[in-house]
Image 1 (cartoon, one colour):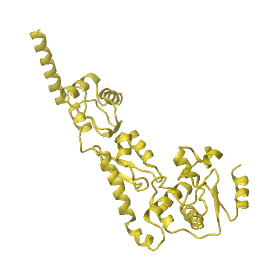
Image 2 (cartoon, helix red, strand yellow):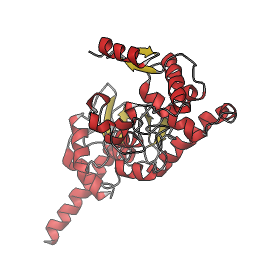
Image 3 (cartoon, helix red, strand yellow):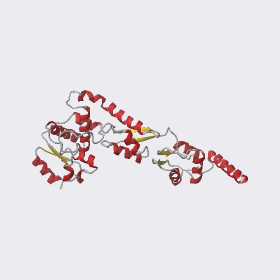
Image 4 (spheres, helix red, strand yellow):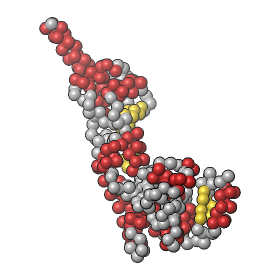
Length: 309
């Protein structure tokens, strides 16, 4: 019993010594290798990914080293770049470090839920943690490219996105103040414009149409508000959906919906502040995204029959 235990301890000592010297599994490779560790992946799954990509020679020894050093539960999700052969201790230090960085890209118009889903898919943080941290911020998380630490918390990320929003629009407050709209009104309208338009010229014209409907107490009739509410694509909305009783139903109720339906980018916010006057009351987009405008409902129906059939 004692002899067997002694041999085991000696074997472990030799293993750790060999690993630290890089003798065991430091494969040779030339090209840069990228390994992505997803949120919630086990040490075994990480070992498999490293073995598959030729970064370690044996999974067992890697897992044993993780266990013996107490780092099997400290692996950080994210994308890791390996540019040269590296020893197991160096790999473990790299993937359990708080200083590793990565780039993320938040797209214009994404809802908080879509941002949360993206962050989880990219191995940054859990979806539920971000949704909780970002509660009440829909519309105010600025879409941009961010360089973050691997260990950044959900609360820190939500605060970063919101802080960036206020920094980006700081110079626009002068243009908003003389208007009869609050910042929240502008953000709500910008979130509609972001979903309803496909370019700079498109944004400003659609902004003018929607504000004109708003100021004349007419329903905005924006499909995107129902898509946000029901989780459906615009083309999948039914007649019953158009009659649903909800403050997000801009077919049933005039005025702005109760809140933003996504996080608009700077161009959409600017379009909401600087709408373009036009004789149009209606608009639609064909399958290519090209916009067609109409002055009357009859013209709008004609456009529907011509471009959406």
